[in-house]
Amino acid sequence: MINLEIKTIEGVIIGEKPYGETSKILDIITKDLGVIGVIAKGAKRLKSPLRSVSERFTYANFEISYKKDKLSTLITGDIINPLSNISKDIEKLSYINFISELTKQVLKQSKNKTIYDNYVASIVKINNGYDPMVITNILELKYLDFLGVRPELDSCVVCGNQKVVTLSVEKGGFLCKDHLFDSYITNAKTIKIIRMLKYVDISKISKLDISDIVKKEINDFINQYYDRYTGLYLKSKNFLKNIVKIK
Image (cartoon, rainbow, N blue to C red; front, side, top):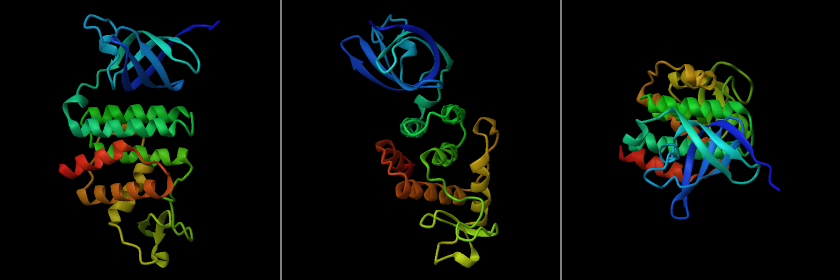
């Protein structure tokens, strides 16, 4: 006999697929339970009370009949933030799709609740009009800790000298002038900004004023670093790169 437990969980729906003619199976990133599967019975019916709370990227408190390690059942939902700007903008949608897939992978490595907090803060900031590339890069930097491949962004990775002049994917972080190894010299502001982004609280960001040159150098470094050290190859990342190129 399966013991059923009614729970109210905070979370974001990151995936949905049809189940039968009228129902859906939802993947929800939750604050307390990681990623769980939930069936929303009858949610595809036009008059279903679950229809509006079972759409992709719904951020809500969900009441569910919880079954550990099995499909739980959605009872009702109370939307926290409709994230209404995301669906209107393919760029925003592409970034949210990517960081949702990335977060799902990171949660397989760690159940630390700050992963969820940073994820939610990021999608809210992107929805509210903050630069999606910069917000995504901040989140990616923070996730490297949980993936066990954090770059050295405090001092030279070779000698510990805090007077650094460039970023090196190959060496795994900052380099000083004595250990350049023919590395590309990044913009001085890139050094300053990426140090700041490593420690910033995403939820408290109120202004982002970063030049296109610095944004590109930081984004290129993070993309190459993930490719080299994480082993994560996400379809949503490739799609995102195409969208950004088109733009």
